[in-house]
Image (cartoon, rainbow, N blue to C red; front, side):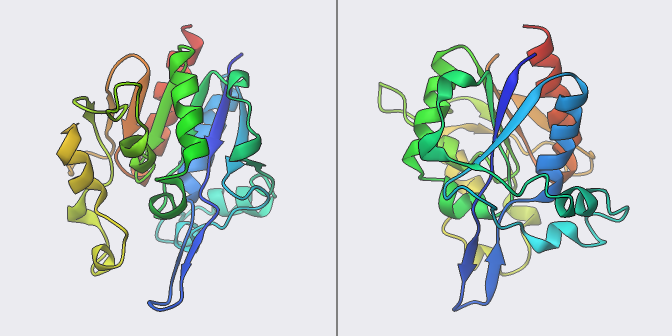
Length: 225
């Protein structure tokens, strides 16, 4: 059995633009279910600890028509998270950075998260990131001063499918920042899901619809170790 640390945004509120965001339901619960069914354990962490703010859009009928993730959320399965500053990275075989636009705000430049990512990687573990979750990888630097994903093939949420007007208020474009330092691969947008292994320890996925794919990729990689 492997132990996975799933990292969630604590949430972000933009009063000026009347915009609230946080972590995305499917991107936690879909891989969590797959990992737990495979016999692995999933712990949760966030910058502030406690109950992190979810992006309410991820619980809407558009994204959760069968109410699977709404039911899991309301069951309290994600109500308690450790503070990132209290996490002992030695306890984990993998870290999974859950997407949602919240990751762009409070996870991207969180130094505690960067330390966890580097430690898990240095210990031979797996670093996984979904959708907007790769944002922290951009700013996680290695001893040589370069990003942990510099020069590597990765994916993440593309500009082309960002909601209209949202790029104007986000702190940065995930795609454009990744393109500066990586071999960015958005895949075929007509394809339901897309995930990329940068090396045998780093895997990224493109969007919420790739959440199950991420769970399967991660579960298979952990089970084979």
